[in-house]
Length: 371
Image (tube, rainbow, N blue to C red; front, side, top):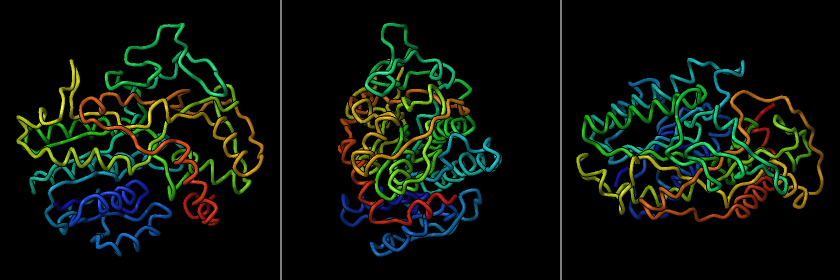
C-alpha cells in the first residue's frame, strides 16, 4: 500500500505516520508539508530515517501536487486548526480559506486523477455554536457537565455531541472551511467513484504537540505550568470549568486501517463498514474522540499539573472569547457501532506523556508557541 499524508510534519501527521509504519509492514509512505508551523521542521529527520519520502509543498498551489507519485490513499491532516483563525487580527481570513478549503479541493483533484481513496480529518467545530454556547451546564467537581434537569438540544447527551447535532452557521470561519470540505469530499467521491471517509476529531493531544492557547490546549497548559509562565482562565465564570475531551492521534490508526480496507466502488462502499450506520446517519462520517471518559476541565487540568509539578497560580478573566463554548465532548458511539473502534490511550497516560516530553524539552514552548 502506498499512502500520502499531508501536513506530515505536524503533530497529528507525524504521529499517524509513525503509528501506521509500525502497523503495516512494507508501507510506502509519502508526505507533503509546507513547514510554516513553528516546530514542524523538528519532525523531518525521524520521518526520513524511516524511509518516508518528504516533499516540501503548499496545498494551495495545485502545481505543487504534480510532483507527487500516485498513491492508494490520501490522509488530509493539513490545516490551520484554530477556531480563532482569520478573526484574531494576526491571521488572514483569506489564507484560512485557501489553506483549509482550496487545499482540500486540490487534494480531491489529485485523488480523482489517481483513483486514490480520501480520508479527511475534520473537527468537532463543524457543529453549530449557538446551541452549544447556550447549553445548560452546571459545575460538578470542578468541571461543567450538561444539566440533565433541563432540556438538552437534539443530538446532545451526557455522552457527548452526536453526529446528528446541527451544523448550521455560525460554526466559525475555521469550522465552515472544514464543513465545506466535508461536503466537497463526499460529492467528489460520489461523482468520480473513489472512497471517502470523514473523521470528525475532538481535541488531539500527546507528546510533541505544538501547543498554543488557541489550539493544542492540553500540551500548552502543561508546558506553560511547568515553566511557571502566566496562565489564565478565560470566559464563562473565569474559574476554568470549561471542558474538552482529548484523543491521542495514534489511536486513529486502527480506524484508518479499517477504512483503507474499503476499496469497493462508491455504490457499495457505504455498505462495506462492519455494521449499518443507523437511520439518518452515514457510515462515511464519524466522530472520533476520547469522549466523556477522556474529558477534563481546565481547572481539573491545573489540579493535575499542581500535583505533578507543584502549585502554580492561574489568573481569571471572565471576558468571553469569540466562538467559545462551555462543554465540548464528542459522542463516538457511532464509530464504535460502525467500525468497532474505541480509543486505546486513557487520559492520564496522555497527560503523563506530555509532561515527560515537556520535562525533556525545556525549549519546546518557545519553539512551538513563540511569544
